[in-house]
Structures are given as C-alpha cells and as structure tokens.
Picture 1 (cartoon, helix red, strand yellow):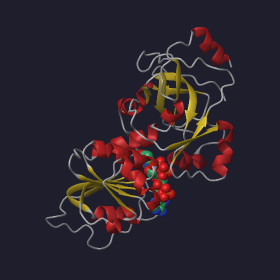
Picture 2 (cartoon, protein in one colour):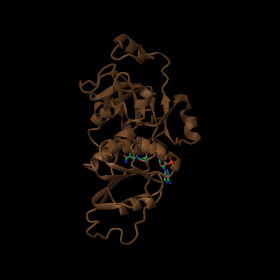
Picture 3 (cartoon, protein in one colour):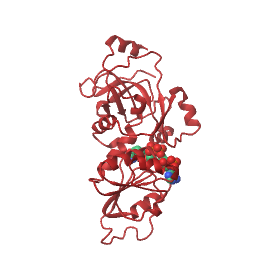
Picture 4 (cartoon, helix red, strand yellow):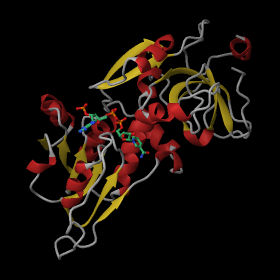
Length: 309
Ligand SMILES: NC(=O)c1ccc[n+]([C@@H]2O[C@H](COP(=O)([O-])OP(=O)(O)OC[C@H]3O[C@@H](n4cnc5c(N)ncnc54)[C@H](OP(=O)(O)O)[C@@H]3O)[C@@H](O)[C@H]2O)c1
C-alpha cells in the first residue's frame, strides 16, 4: 500500500499493535478490496501533526481512527482521535483500549451520576462489559452484572460487581441505569427493570436478535415514568482523546487476557473464528527493523530510515 499522507491535523504513527473488535469485523464485508481495514491500535508517533496539536514525536499513543486504515505499519490519524500514553505502557495493552474502554466510559458518563445507584451491565463478560463493571464500581455504583457464563461470575465479582446473574430473570430490584451489549430479549428485559427516570443504553447487539416489546412495556405508572432507551455510535462521539488518555494511564484497569499473535496470522484467525472468551486477540505489527523503544529518543535519521523501509 502507498505511504499514508497525513493531513495538517493528522499524526503519522508507527503502528505496533492492534486488537480487532466486533465493529471492525462486522465492517469487513463492506470494505472495498484494496483498502486497509481496522479502526484502532497503538504505536509511536513518527511525525507530529503539521498544525502542532496532539502528541509529539516519540510519544507512545493509542488511537481510535474512523474510516479504518489501522491494520497497517504506518497510519495517518487525526490528533483528536489520538492520546499519549505513559511511555512505559505496552502497545499490546494499549491497543485493546480504544473502542472497548472508551465505549464503556462514554456510556457510563451518559448515565449521569451513578454514585450509590444500581447500575445494570448486560453482557458483563464482553470487553466493553468488563471495563464498564470496573469503572462503575469505582464510581460508587452498586453494580449488577449479567453474563450467561456462570463460570466467570467470580471474576466479575473480583472486578467489582456486587451482584452477578446468568440472565435477567433473576434480577428482581429495579435499576437506575443500564448498559446492554447483547440486545434482543436482553434489551427488552433490561428496559423492564428500569426505575422511573432511568435509561438503558443499547450499546451492542451481540445476540443478533430482534427486540420484541410486549404490550404494556411502554405504559407508564408512577414507578416507571419517563424511562428511555438510547444508543450511540462511538465513532460519532466528539472529544474522545482525553478519555483515552485517562484510560491509558490507569494501571488498575483489567482488560482481560491478551493473546498476542504476529499480524501475519490475522487472515487465518478471521477465517477460523474470532471468539476470545476472556480477553482480546492482539496482533503485533512486524516492521522488520528495530525501532528505539525509548520515549522521545527516536532521531530524525532513524525516523527517515523507518519511512524508507
Ligand atoms: N455503539 C458503539 O459505538 C459500540 C462500541 C463498542 C462496542 N459495541 C458493540 O458492543 C458489543 C460488545 O462489544 P465487545 O467488543 O465488548 O464484544 P466481545 O468482547 O466480543 O463480547 C461479546 C459478548 O457477547 C456475549 N454474547 C454473544 N452472543 C450472546 C447471546 N446470544 N446471549 C448472551 N450473550 C451473548 C458473549 O458472551 P460469551 O463470552 O459468554 O460468549 C460476550 O460476552 C458488540 O455488539 C459491539 O459491536 C458498540
């Protein structure tokens, strides 16, 4: 592929690792042949943005680029979608954060203050769900986690869940807010659990099933007045860089197991099924040449050599 040509608001990043997420994989059939897929990843800045904003040369960064182009050795990415990470953070870890962790944080922020309130996380063993459980617990919520695999409930409790359920039928008390990664009947049941004034964010639809609300689901009474279902598309959300920087600097956040593979195995992995029950598969990008792995020490000549390579 041709070298990327950064626009004035874009950085040139040496991509070191990327972790495909369900959105990436769902988009693959739509991507024109000959273009580069992949939203997010992590690496090191080779060239800063011409307008001077954002991370600088040698900064370790994570990025959430729209319009794909991320599964590559080098990528031009807007500084508004890039965040500097601690210099000693590993790109493999950082590459798992952009979409899942930023989605979890943004979803919780949309629920407003959750201190002391019951918050329902449906699909808590998903990448987004695991992060949402941790962030909600540290924000002072009473976290109600729903995940079909009961063998992972103990893990969810260690992450901060106060209650764990295999399905929504055993959740008996109403909740102030909910984030649903699964959709279908899960979304219908999560809506039914909302208290007055509460919202469920239909973030994901992993079940791939229709939502059929029974008659009466939207008849309000004093206990269930003004409830709402909403959704958002992370890629259309403004101002994500600060949230990515916060998440990247967080040493406590557990993203799950990281299964690192060379990027030459990407196609085989996609062909043979992409499920990873307890973490993320991360692809490490091979550059052939070693790059100084130290913060802000790449010289102009070294960067030029890499660009020629
Ligand atoms: N709106 C946005 O901007 C946005 C942003 C990020 C993610 N998302 C969406 O959010 C969802 C979660 O993303 P992710 O990266 O966290 O996914 P993930 O890590 O791949 O996890 C998928 C989860 O779905 C569960 N699941 C799949 N089918 C199910 C079913 N029929 N019943 C119950 N559980 C089921 C899996 O459970 P098991 O582990 O038991 O198999 C797993 O926990 C995806 O749909 C993704 O596209 C949307």
